[in-house]
Amino acid sequence: MSGKLVLWDFDGTLAHREGMWTGTLIEILQAEEPSLQPTRDELRPYLQAGFPWHSPDVPHPDIQDASIWWQRLTPFFERAFASLGLNSERTTELAALVRSQYCKLEKWELFDDALPALTGFARNGWSQAILSNHVPELPSIVDALGLASFFTDIYTSAVTGYEKPHAEAFRIGLQALPGASTVWMIGDNPVADIGGAEKVGIPSILVRKSDASVHRQCEDLTRVQQMIENIKIRRIG
Image (cartoon, rainbow, N blue to C red):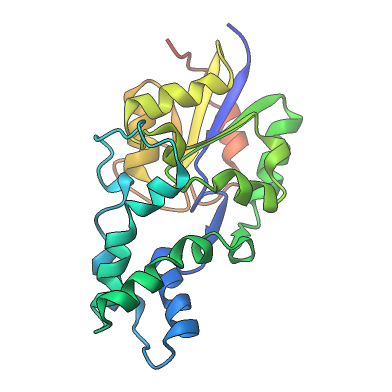
């Protein structure tokens, strides 16, 4: 066995989209229904269920088509728009705009420390892959941000059919470097990224958040590599 692999979460770890899902719906309303001015807090309750990552114990490898993946979310977007008093015809029209609006490449931004961190790992001989609960278009977003060359693979749950913390999601991630002697997971979600990785024997570091239940934490990405290289190698197996 040989080789070193870092599995990166994407959203909230390497990059972010302002407003996320509620922000996306508000952007659509600002363009299509400017008289309506809901807050994110008003829309958020309608988007707290229904996404695949809200039920990570339910795999969906049967969904091989991106359009079908998005269609399964349509009722939840319609419900959010309907809460504002819009009729069913109009909610259907607005829900159809969510996919393109959410995936607008100019809406995505890298964290300032992401590029230096990725560069540092690459220079020190680490293979890197993304393992994210995300939309089918994630590879295009990563490429638009100029990051594609850093990764051997980009695994998005919308394509693999497994959401973190499902064990199969991490087994799929390990395919990025078969036989790797050292593997780490870096992410901002203490349950999906950290708990899921640790459960299958992959050491991990929580970034950008603090959680008392997590052993290894780092405020940002600036010291992650140093932290990993100061810790005794833990083998996967």
